[in-house]
Image (tube, rainbow, N blue to C red; front, top):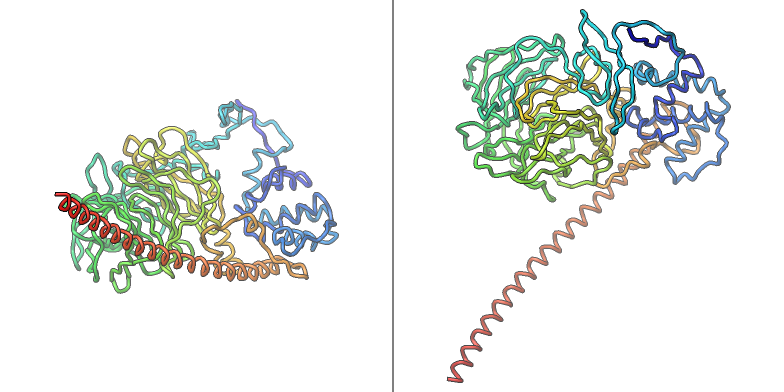
Length: 590
């Protein structure tokens, strides 16, 4: 029997120190932790309360108002006046518990607590390997019906859904029912807490089966599809298609088939009647393809890239209006991404389409491109943070302003890291890693977002990493969407969107610098809103200036092209004259 710790919880001031350490005030810079977990206004309050509790009233000189970050931090701290250290500690912990109710249970493994030795039958001590070093660590393994269902090891895929309380870690929930056949390049979509899997590739054979996983009971079942009454059709085996939820229907777009059609086909599966039908669509349809990206933006689908039946890589852009069922090819300005397939795409604040990675026949990419869906202009912004390695066949899903990307490969090996891009700051960070041949380090896997106990979870299925997989894995991200919290709590418009060359140094603690310091969290939010509008105005002017520079560049390139053509013409005339002179010289000498 192992010995474990039992505690009734820390009292003050130890509880404050534990909370401060959890947030990031432990000697290292808390900025990244604060802004990844909390809204900027909340992060500012936590900073000022920590300063009040640990240092005392603000007695430092007021910084220049031009230094937005430093001035806003000073103003927030200064407004606390002579608040006692004890009161600041209690407010700090209170705000943390309101914003992150489960913080204490996650932090309790690393804080110093009163220890009471208790005999427990379900814990074991095993070493944890980090950077080549071995560290003993107690792992509490919960048991259900006498069987182990979960651990809390870092960066290891865990069996059992009992450890769903662990953040940023892939776990394998105990599913029941008949698992679908192992596959990759399938379609996946969530409708009303149900995960639907359609088609895919297994051993080079295309599939056309449809399965559903109930995300409440974690039970698989197979759907026996019927033939629709209107535009009846049977499901054709396919892979590399996109499955999009639309009301109570699933739309299957494009994909590779054994006998490909000339243009993209859109099929609809009615979840009520369990019937497939082919939609009649107007306009010039794009050429058939697979490995494209399809994103739902309002009532339209945005389709980019892929590979056609002749293995030609594409970088064309099309929009399907789901109300009029009409295709429209878009000729966007700027430099588009190079032709590619098996990339990922995401939409930010219903305006910006982001394209990341993908591959050609010989190369994988890790570039990031942004399309402004209002101006239809491509740009290639500067990426910040831990930029992911080149990859194709990865999967992505958005949670607020965070874009999570899983798996993929580079023609040599699968990618083990799960990464996240903050689409407002264009900053990458690594969420977690897996070890060994794990399905989440596969190509052609699917990734969707759902919820469990009121919190977002990522759900992956399938993929290929030397073998075909049909396992389900779940990850609960600790990255909270500041975008969502602002909309819900404060009704603030969407945050500044993905803009080229954005930096996040001063945006970490952006806040106002009015002469009168804010008096409450609501005041801080108002100041933030005003400051944001001013920044957006400045960014808009910069964008206009950048657009003008691009137009000037295009004109200059056009002039250079004309001059080059003229030079070639002069060279041709000169060669002709030289030839004529040579002939005259020969005839004279003769």
